[in-house]
Every structure is written in C-alpha cells, then in structure tokens.
Amino acid sequence: MSKARGRKEGEHLAIHRHVRISPRKCRLVIDIIRGRKLDDAINLVKADPHRGAYFVGKLLRSAAAGAMEKQWSGALM
Image 1 (cartoon, one colour):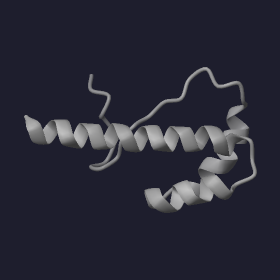
Image 2 (cartoon, rainbow, N blue to C red):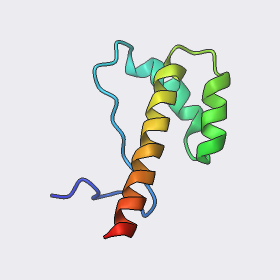
Image 3 (cartoon, helix red, strand yellow):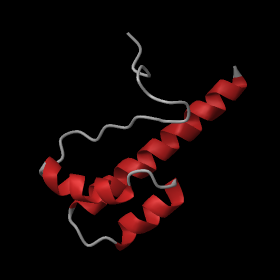
C-alpha cells in the first residue's frame, strides 16, 4: 500500500515524532496555518507565541525540504 494514497497532487507528508507536547497545543497552531501558502504559513508560525509553533515550524521546513528533494530526484530520473 502506497503512503501517497489519499493525498492530492502537490501535497506532501512530514511526521514529527517523539515531541513532548500535547497534540492539542500543536493543533492550535496547525489550525491557523491550514490551507495557506508555505511562505505565509512559515511567517505566521514565526510570529506565533504558542509553544507548539516552534515544533510546527520545524515540521513545515522539513516538509518543504522533503518536497523539494522529491521534485529534484524525480527530474533526474
């Protein structure tokens, strides 16, 4: 079974594990940035005072780097 199943074209997945913070606290930040462009989301996370913003920011940057890597590796094949 493919991990890409159920995702739309252009969507990528990143998982942040072993974070010592409740999902509810991170969900506050995620709800604010859901549906926004990457640049807007990163700027909002940088300005957000919630504790979960730090972890969501790391996750966003990781997802963006993974998407870029996947795009470049697909172009080389």
